[in-house]
Image 1 (cartoon, rainbow, N blue to C red):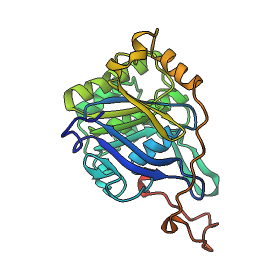
Image 2 (cartoon, one colour; image 1 turned 30 degrees about the vertical axis):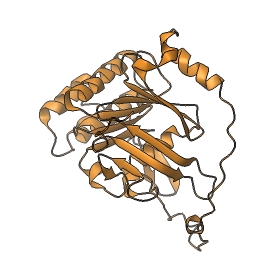
Image 3 (cartoon, helix red, strand yellow; image 1 turned 45 degrees about the horizontal axis):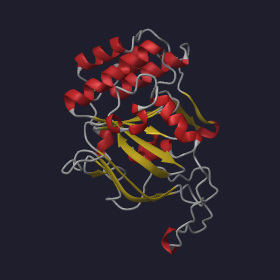
Image 4 (cartoon, rainbow, N blue to C red; image 1 turned 60 degrees about the horizontal axis):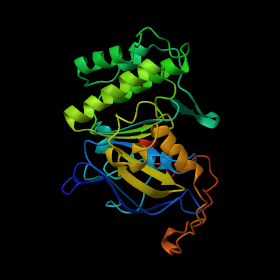
Length: 289
């Protein structure tokens, strides 16, 4: 999907291999190119690797060398300024915080939406007001008394306060009502067309996306089955909507032979007396942002 000369500003994954701990690799020799300014839909069945891929692109997992996963011509994991500057933004999953042995719990303390949104420094006040109005946020909302959808609106607002260059979305609209979802998609489209931002959006809700997305990437069990310009997708020209096209792909999926671990001694984890420690972590600090 990348055009010649676009690699410096887009997303490029080349020959990536990744698996969790001692499990068989989820991704083996995985390659993906996404051009700047694209609005790419990431589709696939549950467990196909969409969320893991987005987290890797967001720099939450270290994968191979510096040139394996490139975002804006920088290493997604090693170049932490991508996340710190707001150029690379990830929105996904439930809004939680880690509390001791309790693990991840919903972020629902007794504080206001205003306290959270205005607590972010260095923000353009015009952009902040635009997002508050767009998401119809009441600044008096208390985070422990709002619905999941209202809490999600505050999360999205905070994630978009900094003007991003690459935005990774993992089912962030699932809690929003129809009006809020369509308004947010229009905002994303405007960001891409006016500022040249790039968006990768993993979702199972395809209403209205036929005219919103520019590209589509279909993943099955960690393998990139196809990438297409949405305007050139042959099946879509003969189908009622994008939902029916994706449904036909998922229904026709066949089991892919389980991937075998690469026999590389350097990748075999050595046992350690600290492996069972609850304080051990292999996650990048950006994972908890």
